[in-house]
Length: 171
Image 1: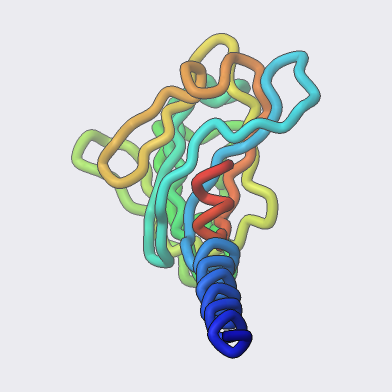
Image 2: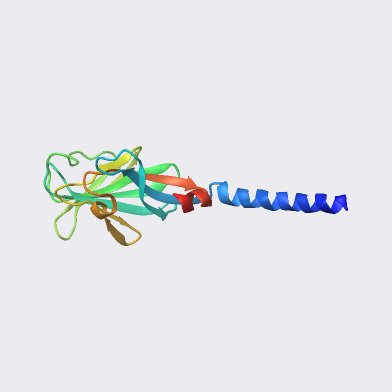
């Protein structure tokens, strides 16, 4: 009789260990937009979506000094987030003025300037959401207003995370 209880206990422990492994070992990758809202101190998760290496996303905004539209495009790679291209309407303060090795400057059909081939790792990709004009975040063909997601003057940061299923569900 005691042997039957031992076997059942071992089976139960094995099942519990498998469930814990499935729930808590990092298996999912996602792009997370986190930060603090205006006049808040507690960090919040504003957006989270499954994202794998090779996923592209962009942030468009009106430059605060240049006063023209900018669109920065990023790629998620195994070791982080990389700036891949920048689209802008005019030269001026705050935009690229010199090309580095491997980068190209071209004109789009509507006359905008596109710098591509950037491939620069961004260690801390963060923005302060505009108070005059909005920042538009685009991923997987969907657009999001950062003002609506996070609120004006929020400090936000994009992070590529490897998460457990439990963390993904509870974040």
